[in-house]
Image 1 (cartoon, rainbow, N blue to C red):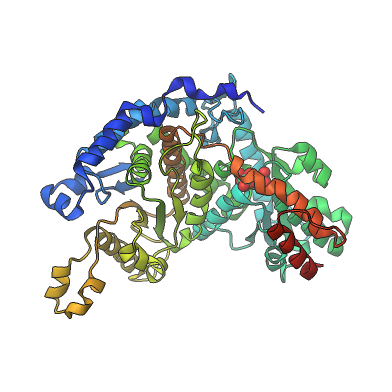
Image 2 (image 1 turned 90 degrees about the vertical axis):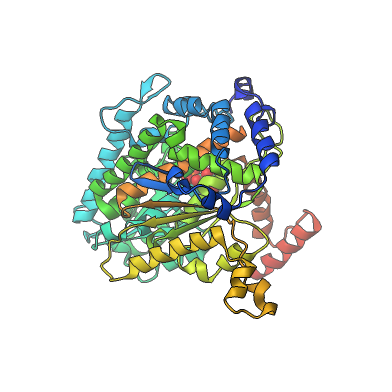
Amino acid sequence: MSDLSAAPTALRPRLSDAQAWKALVMHHAAVGRVDLRRAFAAEPGRAARCTTSGAGWTLDWSKQLLHTDTMPLLLDLARDRRVPERISSMFAGERLNWTEGRAVFHVALRAPAGSTMLVDGRDVVPDVRETLRRMGLFSEAVRRGAWTGATGKRIRHVVNIGIGGSDLGPAMAYQALEPWRSRDLDCRFVSNVDGNDLSTALAGIDPAQTLFIISSKTFTTQETMENAASAREWIIASLGEGAVGRHFVAVSTNTARVRAFGIDPERMFGFWDWVGGRYSMDSAIGLSTMIAVGPSAFGGMLAGFHAMDEHVRTSPLESNLAVLMGMIGVWNSSVLQLPALAVLPYEQLLARFPAYLQQLMMESNGKRIDDHGQRVGWHTCPIVFGEPGTNGQHAFYQMLHQGTTVVPMDFIAFRTAAHQLGRHRMLLNANAIAQAQAFAFGRTADEVRAEGTPESLVPHRTFPGNRPSSFLWSEELTPGSLGALIALYEHSTFVQGIVWGINSFDQWGVELGKALAIDVIRDMSDPHLKPAHDASTSALIRSLRTKAT
Ligand code: F6P
């Protein structure tokens, strides 16, 4: 455990004491909430002024609830909070994760060969490239059928066992990169300790043709270890103990535990303590992705990450996508006090992207204590949710349009599609554009009346509008554009953490439940034990124990 006196309090005052914050709050009090109809009418160039591009992505933030002078004030706040310096510190490998005493260096995972990225004076790029090289060799061997199972049959099924950051990124990318996948094998993802997850993944597949990747940074996570043990039994039951070595590989930072599980460290792909779980899909945790799409496409994804890293590292604040997105999020959460964010990918292949962002954003910034150890006085991380368009339109958009809670939205779209299905892409994108328009400008009661609507229905058919959204789009969903998109959200999440003065890279909030589960598991496992918890917990243990045993 690191010395907590390493907290970066000396660097900055609390956000509430920052002059730039006070200026922003006063600005909001003075001008009130923007009216998007009026703002667009008053400034014909608003869309052009509020459209910014970088690393293959374009962000139209003109439909956010910002007055003309709001973004300059937000950027003053970013400067005041030393956002540029903090971004530089991250790229310099500094120990920004001060509550755990670790550097935050996922940007080194996608640094090109030959570049230099130092942690504690040591260049980590050679280690990163060496791991990529080993992953590449292994992936190619599996893809070619050169790496076989114990009986000599080629591998047809790859099962990634991991949870949180050891699952969400690979599962999301596997779906997103469907057009790039090998047709000779499939990947399955098991995360939940619920046996239904593993048994569904294994149903009907041949153990002799199945490779398990046990993905766990710590190699101690209960869900993953339980699933890994059951998978091991499944292999042994069919192929014998000696088969384990051909059917299991590990991705971890914990060599000792990997060895204890029975996996030779030769078949372990490592990463480093400066890679946070939710920032790890471009490390060896991406092994399943690499096996699915091949080392070259995986390299394309890393290049996309790196292109966005470079955009964020080198662009002035005014044209820096991560800073703009991050500061818009600060405005929405902390000034307008809007508690949620809907992520709306108009791309079916990004169906798991909102779930991926839930961990990235909510595990990073779902915190209320700042680096002075004080409770912050406003919303920090929003509640993140979402579904691919157009499915969301027929589910929760009713609430987004006419509900009592205003929910900011991120639309994500691609101009073209990998498929060749006629008008589908045009229809999809037309829906995205029309929805963003409807959210921003609504429909007034007079407009509804003018359509001949009976007076009793006018209030029901009126749309308030002024529902803020950003529209983020790229040419096509490719490994590169996916990498850049993920990096953009990583960095905008970081920008928000900097402004709020919270550590975006620890996750103490997941610990209590894990610790309490130890006693509950003990009490659940033994029907003779008398649970001695609070009355509700004890009753639940007795009820569910009876049914489970
Ligand atoms: O949810 C807590 C967490 O520690 C995440 O940060 C992490 O991604 C996940 O558990 C899995 O951890 P591991 O890779 O060590 O199994």
